[in-house]
Length: 88
Image (cartoon, rainbow, N blue to C red; front, side, top):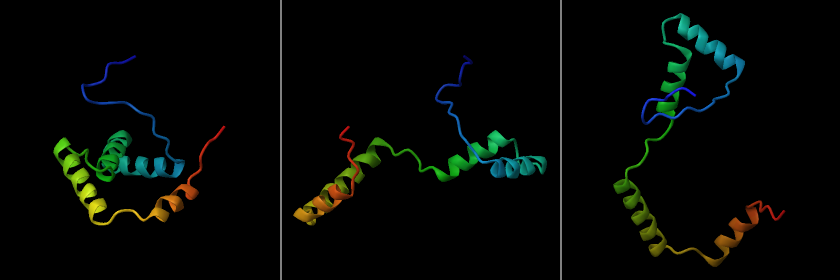
């Protein structure tokens, strides 16, 4: 197994042949390697990892929202009926 740079994880991404061809054409036009293009695409589309401070602020806002407007008793029932429970 090859060593990975610190902080980087390796994963497998499945892409369609059409997308691969598009990226290969862009590579030929100087847009960088296919792997660089995929990494850039993921970086642009993925939300940034929130900091602990941001998570705490989001959780506080959510708590305030539920305090100001608690769930109606039927809201949870509607949600539960929509779920698929594996009761194997």
